[in-house]
Each structure stands twice: as C-alpha cells, then as structure tokens.
Length: 206
Image (cartoon, rainbow, N blue to C red; front, side, top):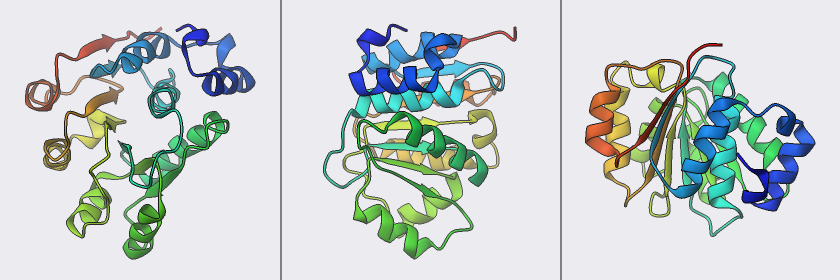
C-alpha cells in the first residue's frame, strides 16, 4: 500500500497514528483493491489489522461528506465491535469531515432513525438493528455504494445471511467487502449470490 496513492487527508492520518511504520498484510493487499472498486473477501487472524483496513478503505472511497444519506454501511457482530470501528473511523477521518453513526440492538430505535436522517456518510450497525431500521424506513438506501461485513464468519450465522442478502439485493451495484478471521462455508454462497468476481485474500497466521 503506497500512501501517496491515498487521499492526502487519509495518508496524513495514517502517519499521525503511526500505522505507516507497521502496515499489516491485510491492509497492503486489500486497500488497493478496495480503491479500485472491487469486491473482496479478506480472511486473516484476529488482531492483524482488519478493522483498520476496513476504515482506511471506506475513507479512501468516500473522501468527503456528500448530501445526507449514508454511502457506506458496515455490519458487525456486536455493539462493542461497532464502537471499536467508530473509534478507528474518528481517528483516521479527522481531515475529511466524514460523518458516522452507530446503530445497535439495545439503543432506542426512533432516536437512531432520527440521527441517521440528520445526515451521515457511514452507518456502523449490528445486523438485527439494521433490519429493524430498514423495516421502518429508518435508513435511506438510495446512496449506499459500499456494503461491508466485519467479523463476517460470526455475522453470517444465526440467519443473518438473509439480512445481508436483502440489503445487497436492494442496492444498485454496490461494492461488497467481507472481512473475517476464518473462511465460513456460507461464503461460497455469498460469492455466488451477491458478489462480482471478488478478490480473495487468505492470510495465514504468523
């Protein structure tokens, strides 16, 4: 991953956070492909930089605020993971003024709907709450261009695959990114069902 090929605000934030001195393999492989608009599966062990790779990729693609409807949806397994993602997003997006919001199961759904309609660029959410919001027209979907699933091997279980398929089917030509600690048998169906010739990165434990 060459920083000079990223938007200046992101490159500067990466340097300020010290990530430039320790670029992870998942980041160096996935960011250029995300930048190109490709779909990907990125499989690598825990704590090897997947969260940061997701956030870098989203910031690079969105670049700056635009209108009010979200342009990226990041689905993750738990409220705690959602807050971890947003913390990274806030750190790396400071120079861009991109806006994010978290929607999770325990939150007040009407408040979350109101906050989403106030305007944002990135919605970070748990799968059940995303579907609940979609069912009450709580998420404007017309501008969504990126659908990302973090901890995908966990999210895809417990019938959450139906939620992912419904969201993907309702979008117009989205870029779909799956990040996981390990390959799940359902990913073969995901690839066939909603992806377009995805790149697959399977990074072995060090």
